[in-house]
Length: 112
Image (cartoon, rainbow, N blue to C red; front, side, top):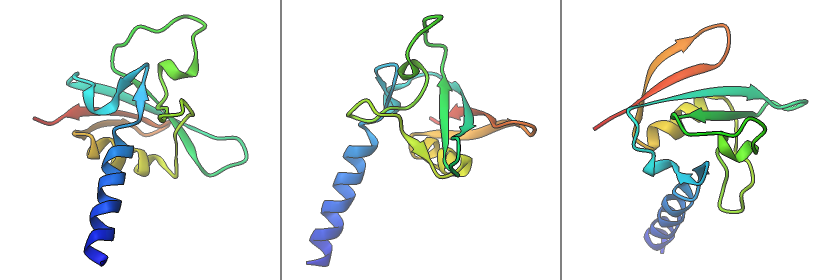
């Protein structure tokens, strides 16, 4: 019974991890070697929102959906911390490359 529960939860977690998109592109389908992630603290919260730049076109006054991760309901995905965001990107095939220590700017490199 525990094994079936584990398999079910594992399957749901994999499916839900592929439901996140940036600018309509699923995270696992971003086929760029480098992406930049920038974290922004949420007002009156310990959570952060990250923006992902992989060279996609964005409009000058575009929607937040062009650079932030959104779920299957097109709601912004928040992370507990920047390390949580780094772990999320690692799960999707990226490794840490460079950081600016004054603000949250991380350059991620896609692993083969």
